Structure formats: C-alpha cells, structure tokens
Length: 182
Image (cartoon, rainbow, N blue to C red; front, side, top):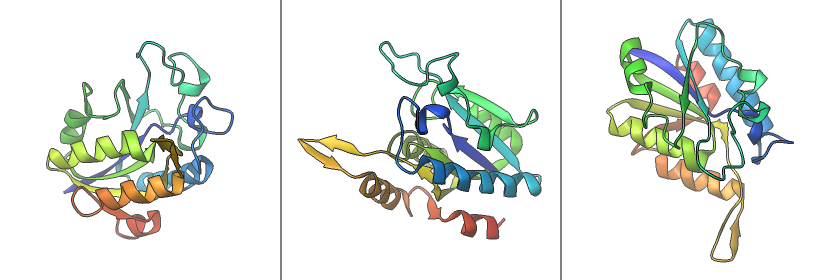
C-alpha cells in the first residue's frame, strides 16, 4: 500500500492581506510545509490542489492573480502533480482519483484549507471512494462562520469539523503523529 500527501488550497488569498483570510493560516502552512518535507524526504507522492474560481461574482481565487497562487512555503516541485479544481471537492470533475490510482495510493494524508469546506468535502469524498484517509489537523485552517445572527469562532468550527471527520471518514491526527508513522 502506497501513501500520498494531498495538499488542498494552500493559496495566497487565505493568508494575511489575501481576499479570504483564515484564522491561523500562517501556523497551518508552516506545519503543512513540515509535513510536505517529510513526504519529500521519504520519496512519497505529493499532490497539490489549486482552486481557481469560475463562479460568477467570485471574490477570491480568481485566475491569473497572486491570490490564486500556491503559497511559497509549500510551492510544488516540477515533478509534483498540481490539480486545478473549480468546486469544493478536489475529486469533482478533476483527475485526482485517477492520479491516486496511478500512484497506487490507497492511503492518503490530507492537509489544507478551509477545513469546513474544501478539506471536509474532499476527505468525505475520498472515504466514499474507499481510500484510507488521515487528516493532519494542525496543518489546516478555517474561519469564523455566521448563522442565524450568531458568530461561530474559527476554533469552534475547526473542532466541530475535525470531530465529525474523525473515525467515520479519516483518522484525524497531528502532523507529528502522521510523520512518525511514515
């Protein structure tokens, strides 16, 4: 069984000064870079996911903007696969499933942004496809949400989504736990 790392939407618009700043983005990308380094050191497969918005009225991840570029801390190497997506799930209308199959990767480690949207959707889809999933929780970030006149803090959003994914869809672990098991 081969392992692969899938880094989801670690793009400039999610960082300070970007069009959709997330809480804890800098810490998450630093941890994701550590995870990426561990996979590279071991010669394991890495797949980068880049979201480019095609939705009318979109305000971030606009094609041909600096905000849509992958963050320099996790910049893809020439030999690493970059898959462009246009929907929250990295599997929807992309080659991700075929790429993972070609790599022989039945075990996938995920990290990225936004936990409550693209990470959640992608991990659930991967589990539905029969992949064994791990999620490096400290290499993910999200934002405050609002509903019904109430604001939910990003930390609470993060915990709720990680708790929902853990067990049924993925093994949610720290980056140090993931790398120790490689």
